Figure 1 (tube, one colour):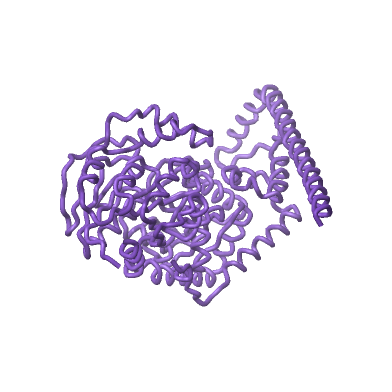
Figure 2 (tube, rainbow over the protein chains, first blue to last red; figure 1 turned 90 degrees about the horizontal axis):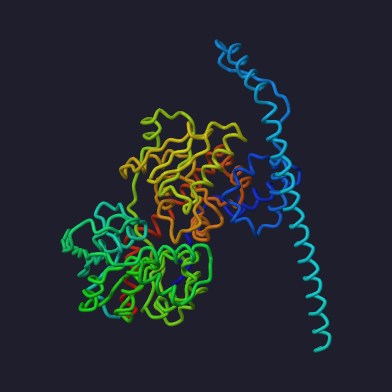
Length: 152
Length: 392
């Protein structure tokens, strides 16, 4: 079976070049910190199993996770887009917020604590295993060199 | 070279309307084409539903347009609980024993009546697929020297089973759907003495009105499309998350059109922007594809993506996951699409396709030329007969 049967060499753009250009642009944006936002971490949740081998991406994903781990529990401005009944709805929302704030604050504080600890644990494990792998690689390289010197 | 005059196609399910799985449709369309030139019979089960495998139609036979289809009952005495138990373990990558592998294949979908018919038959060639059914495994051992397997193989835990080595080692040859599928089979099973071909499936060229779907649905915004089964194995959750992320981050009012079947759970913010068209008549599906900015395909488990070929025929470029060797290969060979690994790459590529109409047109033109050249029926039939006649 000749694989060239499946190539047609039509004129036009070079898709490999386009994909590479886009990858390079993305890498640069990652370095500039454009992407670490919770939106991406959320979008990538089903893609993670495929990305496990991508070292650079994991680093960037950890950044996203750090951003996403902490839920903002501070006071915020309550707004309402439906102009006609806005004052009424805003009042009702403020009332609900005031009634529930003591409970939600406690709940989210604990959740933030758990999220923070989990992120720290994952980072710690990642650093530890990375260090271990680097040490092993250095050791293997040294042993291979010794072996080559002896047989040479 | 000796012509195989009497050919049997063994498929788990058969439908004249093409409402069975992709692999079964592929084998079905090959059988229909072959029936115009050779004496062809399809041997299949009485089941219609791939979840229950209940015998929904009466056993017997029918002949339509020169093609005889014989229906046989699915074994009803299989131990479904045992099968599902072992299948669960395999799916999760648990190491299982030879005995468990054997139980999995024996209690898989099978038909004793069909196997008896095949044992007593005098077909010159038997074409069987896809690989992971008990019926395929057992049938391939009856006349292995005359059997050609259409594996529809994916890089999945089932392909790693020791029991599969036996099937791949004994059959006469293989009809693969794509070069990456063939290479995967070589890596897993060696395939040293087999007769091998990359055949695929033929598609008829068509012209579709690119504005028809948008007019029918009062769509004024650009849209992307996915057609096929909507389920986690096909990557649908990732597709929904990516499109949702794209809309929120870029503020582009992009709609997502889904055709096909299956439930899906979209993020709440995306739901108003999904047009779930369900299973469409062929012409409407082609029109929906023709009007899209891009066809999105997030599935990793493909041996050949027919919908991508259809999208190219409709004049639409594709955006596929790079984690599918097969789809990346299809895009590379044709020049009809781009491939992404991560969300940021997806965002940049889709943005580029939305902004750059010239790029879109070029990719679509190249994809269409590729399909018309490589997947027209004459080319596919030639590759098919080269393997089954040449292998005798």
